[in-house]
Length: 472
Image (cartoon, rainbow, N blue to C red):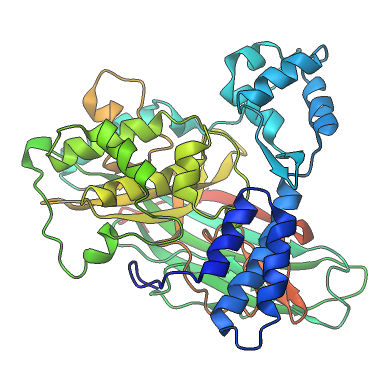
């Protein structure tokens, strides 16, 4: 559904969402039961309320620790951590918690996130201290200079191609589905994007004859079916090749003008509930950051820098969050998708078109490194759509071309699966999606319902292939 076309939610749905966000699960459940008892309840509202019940279950899986369990997890890395010390970090909001019906419940990644958010806590970790995983292109790297030099020499915005072979798999746990039942799976599959990723070729799938969605599906997948067998995992996989290009737009801030918001651009400056809403808090934050600046590029750079300051930390599942941009604004930390949606909301609020892109990153230097990642694009006249990766953010360089590389550039070590978020898969799912926003791990279901992330696993394997002079 396009931005601006969503009807206002009925009061009962808004009340249930607010109750769940505040941890009033018992009250939310009562409201849901009462509403669902009415045969006159419209089907879309019924489905939305049924999902809110499922959202509570998913929140319970994410916030799986009580206080004692969270404290013991902390003590595996800070053996002499005291109750009082835990309380200080807890009260400061550094150990993510949701009080559910009056009982404090802690996010299962709250302790590892604490060491990212608090230098004091990080300094208390006992040796051996394992470094936090970080991609090689999240800091200044020769690859960035390679891209800038190649773009300058060629005059092209697409340079430094890499040819890849990818195998991505999804494996449903043994006996998660009764034997003899059909398991349906969707595995992310890239779209051809001129100048960004080209030469896509499906090499094979398990089982054979994967059904690849059309190119115009913005969250594109390969669809597969397989019969479950007793005592055995049900595995699906696809293997394909593609060529990925780095992108580099040489933007002169003085040449950027306000974009003419055509019908094609109009959706990208509008609100899109539930995750892009121009709340009073968002408007206040924007006003503080932007000040009296009126030039579009400089507005974008101020907003980019402000969101870049939000510390990265591991995220709860997106389907458990009612408004992701608002969550990123207030949680004190955010991951890549949360930062991207916040920046998109701020750009749109300021009349700068912004849209989503996401997929997977990898590295031919750091063997074994790969990760899911989200970023975006914004429209700057007269340049058109240019990329932005606020999570990678500013690089440590005094050279503006390198410092602001990711405000107008992308490295060549990322595959885009999605050119939008929260859009329909093809063929459509019959049950709730596990990931209601992004599409990077895949989806699975059977006639009895959705298979959530605790019922299957995924894998992403890649290898570099020779690149021809044409990039294919």
